[in-house]
Length: 229
Image (cartoon, rainbow, N blue to C red; front, side, top):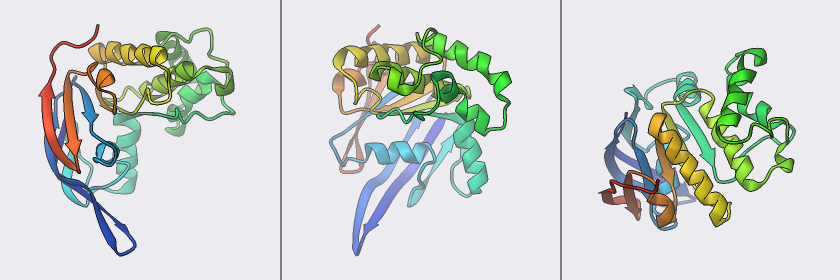
């Protein structure tokens, strides 16, 4: 599903060169739930951004479902991000002037699909994440956990092959965090490959595999087999 080959990322801060990622290589199989862990500054979010095509490696190559993320036009990269990858962020990134169903519909609207054709799908996804009674509510009328569920439904509306989650429970209390993690686990059983960045070992244990980064390098790759039901 995903292949990372000698991926490195270097940033320049004035005259100083900062290496955020160093020659990282591994593969991710279809259907995995991969947790990426590491201390602050270890390269976790950098790696996730490279996999999602939000940034380009300084060196190395990345493939998603056989499609390279290097050497292609910006338009082609945008299509890959829009149609093959779903994104979930720590701070939800919902548009405050839109209702839940409108926020979920937005990726397909940007792709030119008429709203009349996608409302039914958006409503179904909101029902599937337990928000069937909140479809016309705006973000300010929702709790943190409910906003993250809207964000998950929005990430799923394009039927992505890969779901990328950057600290998806970092802004939630422990109860809401567990609800979201169990939802992601349930979705993974019959849906997309999931790659989640987290600093929380308890959250990471919901995955099927943990990769640990330290100082931009891959330090551990652990298959964890059983995970919370």
